[in-house]
Length: 476
Image (tube, rainbow, N blue to C red; front, side, top):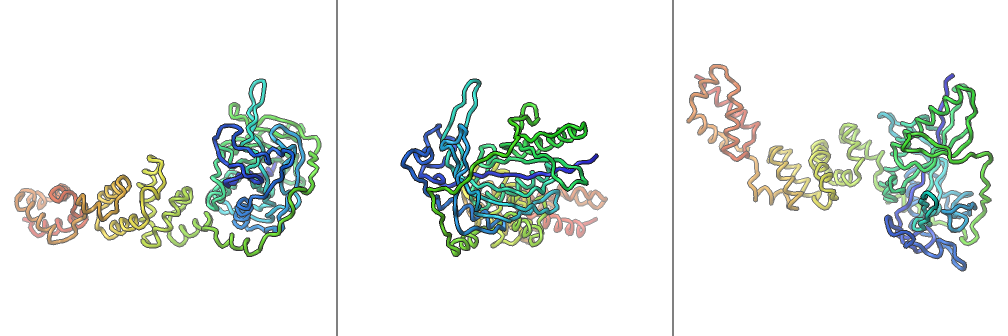
């Protein structure tokens, strides 16, 4: 019997606001435990939450990017449950009226587009962080109250490849809309996978298993692949699938049961009494949309269809937002699309990876565009341009200054080149004789001599052409 896999994904993304969702406590990563906490985050008596406007704006940005219907009446609810990482004993979230609903995102799976529908996007506050030791658990409240958006997909994903493509597309979207750094290893983007199997001919979903808190695309792929194998083996053996919450164990590369779910949890949702509903201005919502930058899908379409970049080159640019931004600015003043891309994803990206610097810290768009013009019009050879670029990045100088200081300008003048060629040939008549006898490899040697006499400044292509012409003329 063949089975069909059905996967839905819940993604949590921490928003990079300066303060928390309902308090003025700072949002930061890596600080000493329990030093970034406000009395409101702990629900101390007499405290009242206040909605972070920036967090709402960021949520709306993502809603627009996901083509969602946006709820203009902002309201919050209480989700009641008792767990050590929940300081209030409840979580402030949006259950009844999520800020965004009915959206979609297009993903790229093996260079084929696929649309994944989004059910909802809602705002909520994050929980504290638990560290489990052998005989005790430690709580760090620094994370408690950090603004989160949760995005719930429709159960349309069929395998781990599609799941990873979906998560990667969302991660890019968070980065390009500037709402989060979306670093899964640091927990600023986390996901829960809901997975079930059903016979291919069945219309009814199988028993759902949830895999919690996956923190890398690699683990997502491994967890899904393992879970598909595990559930398939059980179904073929006629054994039931238990409705469970599981986790991925990196040591064993398997999913491990955390707890069974015999009944649906009763969170006793009700409207948050301390936050009155807020009517959002429709003009403000539209202004947020108007300020959105070009998103990854739009950029990829422009790069491939308009600028004629290869799929892989376009992908590398999109993988690095700063590089993509720099590229977009450069081609506005230097429309040599493939040439600019080649240098950015080659020499520039290599230097950035080694130096761990921002591209804007080492290059100016106007200077780089000028260098690309010099390469395009043969003012500089490729070798010279590489040397100029390195000095631009290390010395923070413009290309004209570097060329003048280090005498890099390429010689393209026929008269100057012929003077050097004649000088070399006049003193080496034996080489002309060898050429006459069919030893054409001598041309490369002679080009090298011209390059040496001009300190590498002669245009090698033009030198080669002039040499061939002169050798043919002097042929014995």
